Length: 454
Image (tube, rainbow, N blue to C red; front, side, top):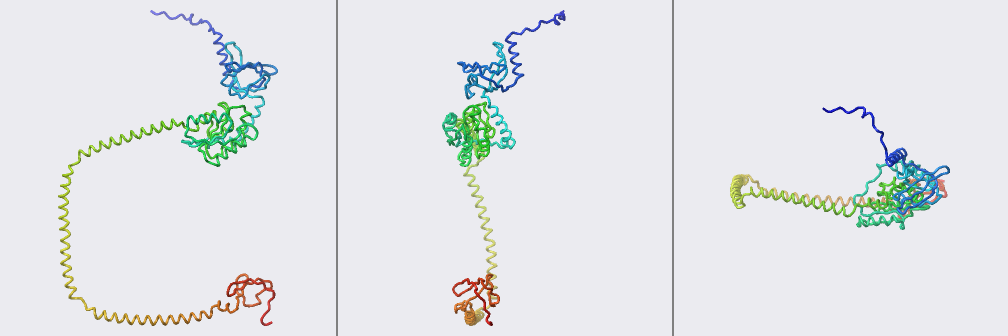
């Protein structure tokens, strides 16, 4: 029989013993969970750049210091190499270096001190344009499915342009490129970038527009945080992809664009589907069409076989149809001749009756001819009389024609409203009168007015 376990042994248990490694790991996890990414400002001290590419330095102020490490994957995007005594601001994660048990910070991003003001300007402009709906997702446009021509807004000397051209040449050599050159750094760069975007929109010669630049500090990328660039991107007539800086860099242009790419190369990859993918899709579609055609042909062949089994001999069908045709022809001939015979007999009887009752029309025809001659003579006499009367009326009308009166030297006087004047009392001094003459008209001014009876 099995004995129950000793409860006294269960109540007593030795305390858990942690190794130093386990302790440091737990402390590191506790620090990382308790302190999220935070911006820390201080002065660079003891800066070391290892052969692996990692940066090691101390961040200090007047009263304290902390060890810091920035690994190569983050350091390569810093945009500058700090020096001893530089005032910087770092975004870091608080952690513990387990091998030595040292408390330190892992730096994700670094910028020169004072960039915080620029970042505040960035946040204010982002909030303003966002409130105006410039970043709304419902106004984002989808990229064209098949891109034939891509526009690029960047500097001709920028390394980003070479990266984009290399990526497009590798992925989609069939796509043509239009460069809209603009400086991507320095004073007035934002205005030039906005002007290049508006030029591309106005010309409407590309299917897609890339606005790109390589990595750099927030000051280097600031031209892409200007309001004029964001509004030019939002108003562009074609979809816009923003590929500014590196993966950790965000600008106002990224939010205004229809799509944001982490890098210029990523923007090029998003802009055009690789030619190999199109060729593969076409090959797959061709295979589908080929299989569909084969299936249709197979079904048609089966249907043809079924019909051929039910098909009678053509000779037998022709003989059957010939007999049927002869029978129908005989019936048609009989059906046609019988009514014709009946109608022929009825017509003969009608002719006999008509011959008996046909009147003699010769006397009537002679009377009609005589009446026709009399009518012609009467009409001719009436026409002659009417022509003579018309000529007399035309002569009288010609005598009364006011144009003939005007040709004899008379004139018709009208006032400014076109009313004909007959009484000099209605004429005012210095009034302009219109005279209609035989061969035209004239306007005269009145110097004085005299009555006929004065």
